[in-house]
Length: 155
Image 1 (cartoon, rainbow, N blue to C red):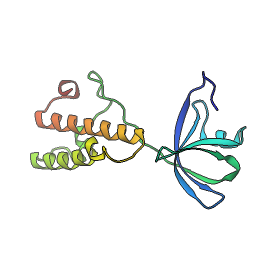
Image 2 (cartoon, rainbow, N blue to C red; image 1 turned 30 degrees about the vertical axis):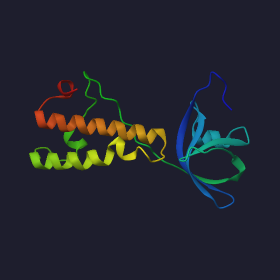
Image 3 (spheres, rainbow, N blue to C red; image 1 turned 90 degrees about the horizontal axis):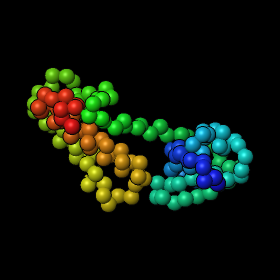
Image 4 (cartoon, rainbow, N blue to C red; image 1 turned 30 degrees about the horizontal axis):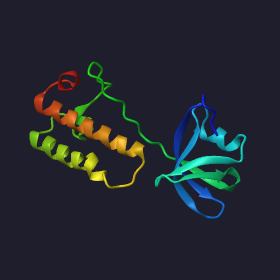
């Protein structure tokens, strides 16, 4: 499907097929293309991977409709560049929140995103990596608000 020099990317989507089935997962397409060009381009099949990691070649002619999902990406934090990091926003708080509000929000969010919570769940690597990145950002935000340090000092 791809040449050795051609790289691929994933496009998350829900697909409705001509037999009535709906599947959710991601298309594997050329890095230089987009979903529209891939589905309307040459070739009779497209690679699709479900959230259960089931790889399928789907006939383009059997696809009735697709709904692309927008997966939010988290920028990695660098010690010298805070990338606009906002500790209050990360913890879903208003600036000037009390120590008890900070603690409560930190505990609630860290439970939600902690990687060990999902260790037995079957999930795509992208979602696992997202939970890990969010967990790190929550820890950093809490540390910054507790100590009053900047991103560079807290890292």
